Length: 80
Image (tube, rainbow, N blue to C red):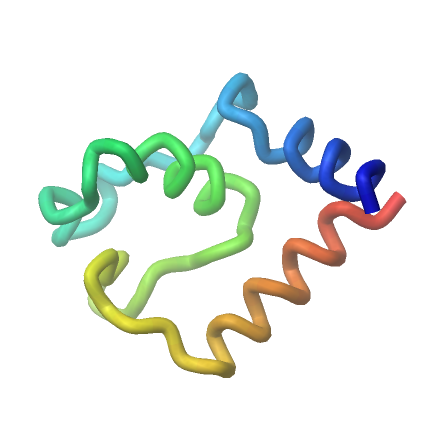
């Protein structure tokens, strides 16, 4: 378990170069400043893709289906 956490923190750490910018999304101004870096990393890693109409929807609730997809993407990313 510790190995997976360490691998995940290394893979998704803040020192990774993020290729995706929040500037693409129309609602980027409502993303909290404390979440912007991690959200950018998650976008660049393909863990999340944003909503329809170029929106990231940072204030919206996550459905069970969306949470399941995110969980599977993270698990697939940390597998050796």
